[in-house]
Image (tube, rainbow, N blue to C red):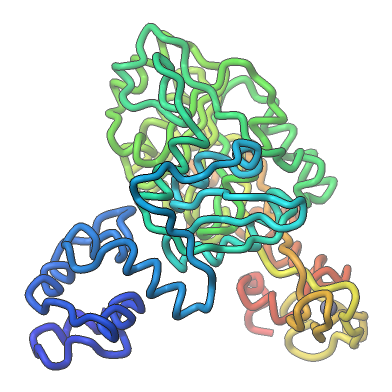
Length: 448
Ligand SMILES: [Zn+2]
């Protein structure tokens, strides 16, 4: 955060390290230095973007932000007159899940079967193009749109019926006591478990974990790795009528006691907690699993083993975790090679050895053609690591074993880890060595 240091020198306020939107707006209208400083000095708030901070501080208006981004990215703008309700096509609501739209502040506008027009507020959402292609099979055409318009659109497209818990999640555990627990909102077709991209062994292990009557299954990976999609696919696979879901912000507000009290009354078949972000949420998940619930949740982590150490950092008791954890699914999304233009080559050298590929095996590299907009890649490919917690692995968790010990245990049990699944995808010509950079080789191969 080097730009924070420049604040004290008023003339150096706007340097290259500053958020793009500030530089864009500064180019047109001078920003008030004092208020700008307030934005910088305000504590970082979880889900509030720099654009929203600018709005709240009154430094820019939403039309200005949409215009600045539209000019900069040479993308269209969607800014209907504020006094009119924005035109909506209710058909498009089913293409994108409400929760995704709310989380990223995007809204579907129109669909012609191949292209989905999407209102976006921040350029961060441009990164969603690949996810959207995967989700609904459409190319995304983004329109920079004022935030209030997106909020109106979301309200019209994904209304909540009065008397019902808000479409996605519970506001307060106490408020829902006595009501039936909210279920997941109906969303666009999810990839069924069979087509997630798991190997037969991984699929068998995952089905075994999901057949447990209680316990905890965690889906790990960095942001935008598709871990939530996997969780949702598992929920769909489980097909239980009584699913209680809680989003991350919600989970942050719940206390362990209030959550458990609500669940004891409602007795859900499955509890799905959007994301474990802090110790309290981790406790809620483990306690719910200990009290006989089946709990699914996601966690931001690099691999399955670091999920275990992350929970230890969040002060989850090793004994309770060993007792409840049924399994870990960890994943990455890499780019899928364009099959029209990929070019074969022989795997040689250090890279091949580090991923355990034999010398001379055929792998592919990206080239670029009209089908893939010259990038050499088309679509995304999930790479998985699925670890079913069996008694030996559970013992390792109870003993608070190191990451290395946990990994050695998995290798001894012949469980394919992320680098192994990556190597398999490379050998199958689905992706390239270039994409493997996001997945470090196995620890026991790093010296090679
Ligand atoms: Zn191509």
